[in-house]
Image 1 (cartoon, chains in turn purple, brown):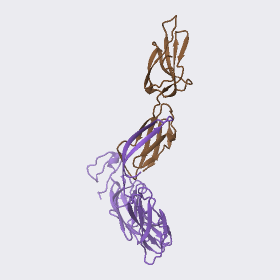
Image 2 (cartoon, rainbow over the protein chains, first blue to last red):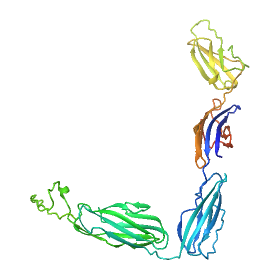
Image 3 (cartoon, each protein chain N blue to C red):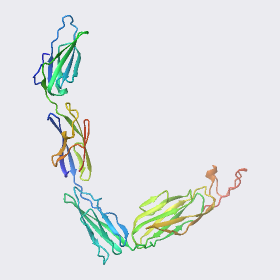
Image 4 (tube, helix red, strand yellow):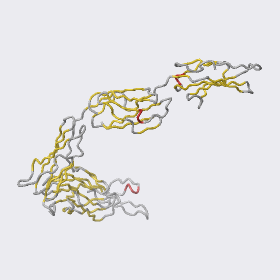
Length: 275
Length: 160
C-alpha cells in the first residue's frame, strides 16, 4: 500500500448477484527507509566477511548497494554481489574496513549505514591486563568495603567480560562501571564494544554477611576476551573478624566491648572495635 | 390460498390470506409456513393464528423466485392445508458486511502490518465462498480476497 489516505472498501456478492459495500478511511504515513548493514565486529585476517542487509527497512522492494569506503593501505579486496541484500568480502590485511550500505526503497527514499570490520592477525592472543583494589581488607562480618577492578584493553576492538567470584552469601552492589550488561547470578560485567586500548573500571561494594565466620576469604576474578581468559591481579583476599551479632540474639548492646553473662549458653560477647 | 397464489412479485411485506371452512367447528387455529425452494423445505412463520390472514415482513426472509406459502389449519382433531398454487417472487436480500479492523480513521506507517478483518452474512447463501468477498483501496485498487474463511467471518491480512 502506498502512503496517503485510503478509502478501504469491503465488497461482498451473493449468488444472485446482489452486492454490498462498506468502507472505512485509513491513513498510511511514509516512514523513511532504514539501512542496517550489521554490527561492527572483529574478524581474522583472511576471513570471508559476510554482510547482511536484510534488517534494513523501507517501502516496497529495496535496492541495496554495498561499498568499501575505507580499508587498510595496500588492501586489494573488493565486495562481491554488491547490489544484493547479502554480500561479502575478504579481509586481506589487518586493520579497519568501513563498509557502507546504501538502501533505496520504492518511494525513492534513501538511507545509509556504515559497519566497521576490524581484521586482526589470526591466533593473536589478547593482551588484556586487569587489577583489583580492595579498599578495606580486614572487616567485621556484616560490614562492607569498596572494590575497584580496572581493565586495560589491547589494541583490538572487542567485547570484554569481567567475572568476579565471591564467597557464598556475600553480595555485590554496583556503583559505577559503564557496562552494557550485568548478570547478577554470575556477577558478570559485559562491555560489547571496547575500543582499542580503552580502560574499563568496575566499582562495586562487597557486603559480608553478618554470620560470616572469621577467616580469610579469596576473591577471584577473570576477564574474558576473544575466547581467552586472564585472571584479575592485585588485591584478592579479605580477612573477616567477628561481627556484631546483637541482632541475631535479640539484644540491644549499650556500647561495644561490653561483657555480658548470659548463662551457660551464651558466655562472652566481646566485640572488636568498629573498623 | 388466496394470496399470494402464484406469479406475484412481492415487496418488503405481504398480507397472506387464505380461506378454509369447517362446517362443524368455529374453533380453528392456523399455522403459516414459507418455502424458498418451491416446497422442498418449509420455514414456520407463525403459529396458533386465529385469523385467516397474516402480514409477513419479507425483509427478514430469504428471497428468490420459488416462493410458496402454506397454511395448515386444525380443529383439534383433523388437519387441512392450503398452499399457493404456484411459486411467486420475493426480493433477493444483499449480503450484510462490516469491517471489524482496522477502525475508521486509523493511522499507520509504511513499516507496520495492518490486519484487515471483515464480517458478513447473506440470508440466502449463508455460506459465501472466497470469490464473493473483495478488499480494495481507492488509492491502490484490489488489495486481495479473503485468505481465511469461517461462517460469517472473513479475514485478510496484508502487509503495508
